[in-house]
Length: 475
Image (cartoon, rainbow, N blue to C red; front, side, top):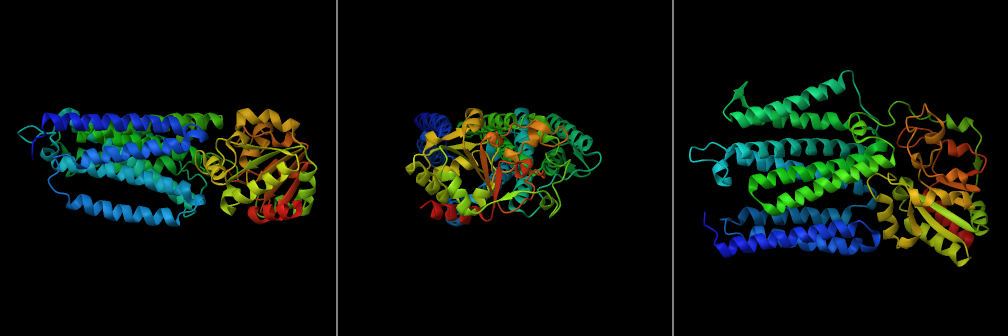
């Protein structure tokens, strides 16, 4: 392998430093809708510089596998980008996180099998103790990220029930496996040749890390999916950082640390938005204690039903309307029709605002992305803490597909699984127009008391078709 000159070493280090700065600027830009496009551009530029600096390194002796991987991976990525819908974005993110986790496992495994090629072994072929710890952590976190992300993908895609899957002794088993992983890391760091049942400690810890990844996610219910997405995002970052040490790649270390820490902070914010502790989410299901009403059970209660014409009349005579988007809007792809409705109302002198709950949808920022796609002005979109006091002064709260995040039971029913979760105070508006296909429970499996309030009018049907019908009536 050719030796790098001092100039090449300095140039690579400088390129990695520039890319790290750009990644930090990207995260800063992504913290606000107004600067998110610029943040994306910073992130893209930083990644281009980091990849170029790595590919142009003289340490690379053959480009055949690299070029082949770029063609295959780039081709698959291009096809996915052309076919994926916004409603499938949460599961796509989960799938991508699984790939990051598996990449970490494969790199760690390659380093274990051929440490000399990675420069992490002495002349006798023994891996340095620090490198053993680094690759062990990278492999373990990567395995957890992979298997956990696969379960998240299956739940979000509907290939697996979104309800929590629990069994007796689940938590003690998880704790035992966690202890075993750390014990095996210590055993491997102490003596890499130690083997039990014919397998090295490294392979054992990787195998049971895959197992605990499954066990950690299956008891988490649908309403906690936004936290799961941000959580596996954090895991993927720490896995990348651990492998960065193994590869002695500063850019990977910095990038992984940024992703890991930002994902952890985001997970904390999401948990705060649900009034739940991070460990409480990890260690158990949300919404699994109580099931929603059986089919037709909610129909026994009286509800006010309305049509698009009824909704148009109420909206046109309102002075202030607050729109609450949810996953139903995403499924129906109703964001463009919704913005058109808002534009019509504003042309009639109606004040229109949007209220976005931090866990609305299936991933962090899901509703913000959809509204931005429909070119909804950023200054009309407000988070829960900033908008909740406005509902009492609103003539109409227009709820389109949101369920759990508007359920008053979170404030009034101590027996409800979502009790204590901060929700949007839509019931305080003079009138509530609720667009939904049926009276079925939300993703948390809890019936929404709001359906049966005296000031609520249910608009049953597809969110996009109903909104288009309202627009036609308004015009």
